[in-house]
Length: 220
Image 1: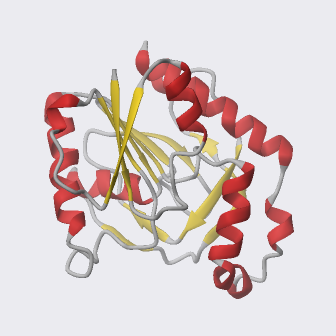
Image 2 (image 1 turned 90 degrees about the horizontal axis):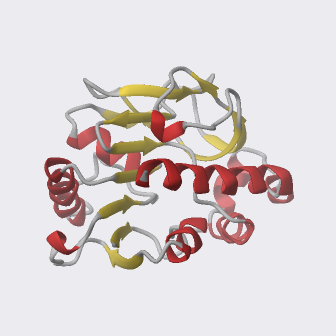
């Protein structure tokens, strides 16, 4: 089995999913900014985060190529996991608007609330603490099932057929948080957030466990 991973920023990689997929004997292929690839070779797709917006297609033309890749996997009914920007891209391909949210940024640990159940989210808690780093949001695609919401932004996770869109960073590791805090320090200053407050060992451990559950559920 092979997984294709669309990466937009070097430090925003698949995190714990690298270990999970490898432990299951799944080969991983990273593609940066959608270079030409034989899509048919792959069995599942990950679309990761990034600082660019879905609506900045003119500035980041590789987004157009990635939209076509997402369409290909949707039509083939192969599993897709879109994270943060990846979830927004999935919503866009499914015909919905992506835009800068009116309620400001979500950065750090936030509680989300389960709205509906789905087999892909079996074993997930009703109100987990999850790690966020975004302001853009999106409307729920027609035919999709909302799984989680937050107080600030309604669409935190959804399922559409074999595709999963997750606004929060389920892939994160402790090292990733440290690296993001250094690289995106200006965001933290603007929001008056102490970078040391982002390291929550228990929350990270729980998030990693949810990542394992998600892959187990999708591959069943």
